[in-house]
Amino acid sequence: IAAGANSFSLDNNWSMRNFIITTTSATGFKIDSNALVENCKSTNSSATAGRDAFQLGGGGGKILKSEAISTNGDAIVMGLNNQRVIGCYVHDSVDGIQTTNVDAIILGNIVDTCSGNGIQTTSSDDRSIIINNTIYNCGTGILGSDAINVLAINNIIDANTTGASWTTQANTNWFDYNVWDNTTDVSNVTKGDNAVTGDPGLTDPANGDFTLGSGSNALDAGMQVGTDQGATGDYK
Image (tube, rainbow, N blue to C red; front, side, top):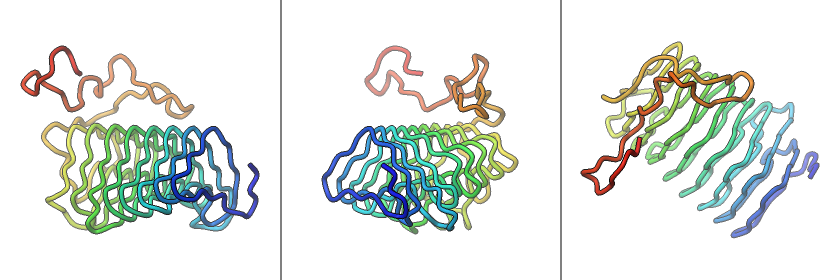
């Protein structure tokens, strides 16, 4: 769908799968409350700053296994409560994923080559859950400003200018079990007792291969599920 200067919008409760959309609209591909986008690609090529590839405009919106690019703006903007971005490839934008409200879940994404921020949380009482993402080659991997109650675990934060940055330390944020290899890893952020520091050995990220080499320090370094929690076997 070549939308041109128009936004492509879904109303509440719609599902859309398997589309490619190009746009230069301020809101790009916009979905409303409880709508679902899966296996779609949105590219916003506008020369105007601050334009979105995807915009989640209503609470409960979800983007799964999709690709987002915004040449001069935000690839994905999460605007209201209880929104989800899962398994997406977000790249070559100014900002990758931005959440402006509370209770966002950002899970299992690759955020690659965003000149501003990989993931940005802007709500003061944020409560974002940021798990199992790879954030590579961005200005700041995770920017929190004054966000509180953020949980960030099992992420690979690699080759960014700054890995994670807050304006002031927030003791209600919890970072741990992440892998850090950046020019500066943290500013006003505590890595956690189980953090791993050093090159995670991504196979060929410059060409889109974010798998781990056999000697990677990220292997078996995530949060473990132990037998004392009712599980058996090797859950590394």
